[in-house]
Length: 415
Image: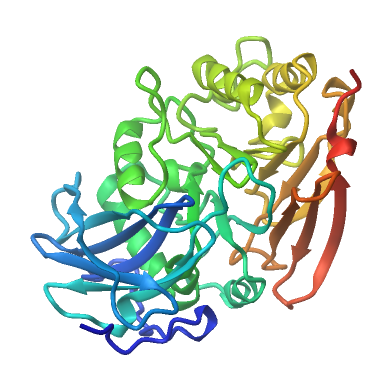
């Protein structure tokens, strides 16, 4: 059996120009999407009519015939009143740093729109060179050219930090319809089908604008979110939330949930005001302390300083507690990434003396909801004697508007 005719080169993949207006029925089929990817596995996500049988053929990109066929597991739709449901499958026994192609079949039909490609991660704890793309603030109906520029940058993985849809509710039915509508955008779909993507929510896809841990129905948001993305398992046995961690080569990523346990923005700015909640904060610091990674990336939707109304800037105790924990434990190589503010920049925080070295913040916001339509790329090179991280800000005109590089020795506290 051979694959159905399909172009596997990422930029050349053709997609149906599906358009879903707000208020219309959600598309019957959405995806595929590549989720959490390791050196030996990859999650593939699809949305299809309930009770469908979904299969996936896959092989190394150089092979003509499928290496294997696997069956997707269906996930119950918590809303209960949509005609479809999400499906996930984990491809296993893959080789590190290897390109694969795949074809999803829905009830035996292999539609060319349902094929894609991926490359597995390098071995963990081994030095490598790789490129990360960082985005946030995807807006339906806005110009989408930046997704094409992003594909042209050939990132190895993609982290999107909130406002990936603007449902502004905790109602799962409405959230799901927005997810499906956004993923029908061809340029966005092209990224999801070929670049391993990790996602964290921010206020507009968690609940109402500037929502926090008091949001009614947040449990429904969490269930739906976990079913609609291919992230690693989130939260802990004792602490619910969308937060998770993963490694790519010898860089470790801590993706933080700045909504589920958050104190209200208008709470008194004292030592009781929390951004993460104590349990998630402890999870983060414990993870940073034991991490052997060269660089440790902390990422969430909220900026450290740029947002005057809805970020770490108005959570003084929580922000300084984070900085002090990094500094007191002499944790090297920390880089912070965020979104939210509809503009992109890279800078070092003025309170870096609490950390003991320049604390880099990469803000990537407005890939399809800003004047600049910008995103960030981050190149890690951990093969060098002194590993480096290079950050570039790319605008919707295709031009690079910032380009800065730091060495690991720059991000290491004095002993």
